[in-house]
Length: 393
Ligand SMILES: [Zn+2]
Image (cartoon, rainbow, N blue to C red; front, side, top):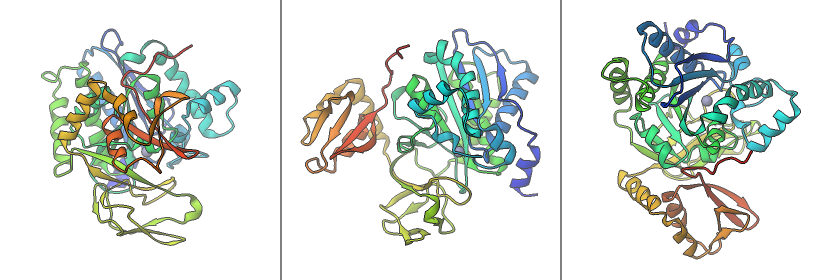
């Protein structure tokens, strides 16, 4: 029996939004897990079910609340990424507000969004500062598991505890992810790619990530719950030989008309040369924009991301960036030529690409300014704040 059938056979119908809900928040806080926001990625649901079953069977008293929700129920049952629209590209704050105001979903995913928000509401109301969010995914390509995060110090704490390679800047290249939505609301949030869709090891790794996070948050004592050390061991072995931290520099976005096809044989973390042929589309060969690590090459199904390219980050630079941020030295960036403050948004910086030097981007990354969007003649760089301002009601 191959991996694909074993995962799929285990799969019961996906009927309930809440996969499980155990414990009370109290002083410990809440761990919220979302699984299967892409319907062709059921591994997270299976992983969460296993953790709930084990916690129930062993009668573990948790010092906090663990709740898991299924993301795209309709798509999970149809075993495809989405029905009408990618549910993980619909969480721009204004768009969410508009769907909620209308109250009438205009497609399958808007219905899912409204139902998910009904679960989120009470958590965002009372728990936001003590809420940790894990977003569980799997990928179409083969490769070791990894995690991605908005580059803030509180997120780093949760992510680095997993012992998985951390990808910085991945979610900043994507608009409308649930991870970013919750991060911007003030939660700590980490996304996890467990491995290939349908591979039973993917379920094991996602389960391990949940156990480790339960321990990191102090919900379970790892000297008493043996699943935790076993989980750490499992992930250590799964990521042997993979760099600790990679930062994303290129997102190769595609549309359906591009007829994009990856060349065979690429997997996550493959080292590629600049100009190497990675894929083909209707324009001919698609060559690597730069040399570095390949991530999330698209091998099947729906989606707008062809692949990502990044480079390894040495631990030394992570330390430097931590100190620079603690010392709040980000104001020095405005002294660089071609860099100015955005008059509309005090947390953003404007870069005039005709004046600024290439290295500006590297400096910006050290301070966590990883989101870059063009506006008129400028590039607007923003970063996520370690502690977002309290929302105005
Ligand atoms: Zn996914």
